[in-house]
Length: 227
Image (tube, rainbow, N blue to C red; front, side):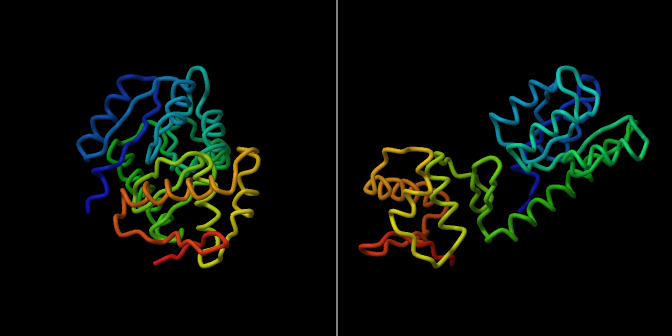
């Protein structure tokens, strides 16, 4: 399968000509590009939508690239490619230490940017495979991906599924699952756990109709069996 077809890239660049150039090159390579022209707008985009990678300019209004990168890293591990006119090694290291995955110095060749993005996406797909294939748990963003698709989970569903995935084959009692989500919903009952698990199964089966990995253990609770 061509990995480009379903990938959406956020381009954060205040120079519209550069932004348009990058968006056009992304489109020519079958990526979907979304533009943001200042740091605060980009931060809101990153919180509200799911992106497969971010191209991030260092010098931005509202929030600069370093500040924005720091903010994004509090809730997401999305691959970030930083564009910078700063050529000093200490500046490049600062960007990487802040959480950027790679950088390209301005002026740049658009083809190089696309090649770097492609490499970051391959690396990201590699993490997906390594993380309980075909599952990927994004701890920072409270989301879980199955076979390349993000499950539309509530916070409680995320907490339950994350716990089950963390110890496949182990049986978790309803009380244990209740304790896991206690801080989220203090008045939840053990019967409600059954409802959440039922909803989880339905959401997972929309992606994988043959899924039967969440197993009910009579009188105890649930376990997760990896295929």
